[in-house]
Image 1 (cartoon, helix red, strand yellow):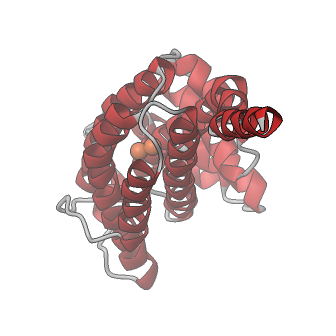
Image 2 (spheres, protein in one colour):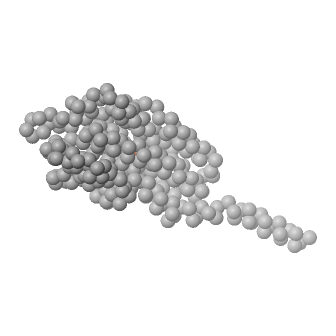
Image 3 (cartoon, helix red, strand yellow):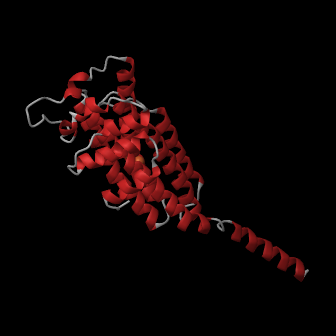
Length: 264
Ligand code: FE
Ligand code: FE
């Protein structure tokens, strides 16, 4: 998970074929100072014809959370009131994922300590640091919306966290089977995050919350990247070696029994 952000973004782009990816392309260009407009890109995917109305916002789009050069305050932070049904839902989902990210910060050290291979330990450690940044990024999203950052209990992440505890309890320490199981649990977390961030990016684009969309999309790319890395570790290292665990002891016992029978 130590790839450069460019690699991560490139990979994320390959993975995501939705309108979010189109938004992302715009977001990247904005981040690198190029002229861009994510809404315009997203519009082409969603059939929107409002491209022109957004092009005037290009400058404000690339200066998250600040006033624009000509002193005009960012439009969206004033337009988001948290009052409409969709705004309320958006805010509730933000609180859900904020809670989830914080819960993941509690779970990852446990997962790191429980894993067998250094490779998986490193991956969990890297993702812990990344997750801490996801929390900070969400706080920025709340800030751009003029809302207080707060979590709301996420039952889904609580459930997966319990699953992690069960895996640690039910698998043997020092086995590759434990790592294979921990990877699957970690990927369940990533997929939950990907679903949530993916949906939030789409909603932010719809509501023209450009800064929020950019911030959420950065995290979405990192979650996708983590998911891909976990698949890579499982396929290249862990699963094949885990396949033969446990069977050998049984085989040895069988061999011993056969030997005993031969002696009789
Ligand atoms: Fe995260
Ligand atoms: Fe994650």
